[in-house]
Length: 100
Ligand SMILES: [Zn+2]
Image 1 (cartoon, rainbow, N blue to C red):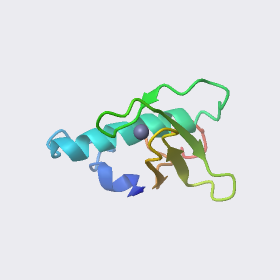
Image 2: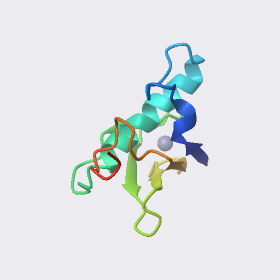
Image 3: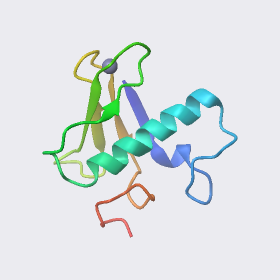
Image 4: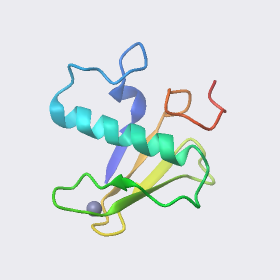
């Protein structure tokens, strides 16, 4: 289970730093995709984001929590890898329109 404060993945300009270690950067990019996807609020769309676990071909499902609206929950239906993202509102991947 990954619990990520997304602000910790960003530099002062709100970008994912290019000089981050590769693994951390891959995770940050993956989480950014999930935020971009979940914050649209369109849950009819087919999932398209590939799971980050090595060898897993699952497509990750991500959604904004109904009660805790500042949390995005995500899970891979195949390997059950999942997590929670907090502090994503107002980032450039936030499509909800609430953060800016
Ligand atoms: Zn998986």
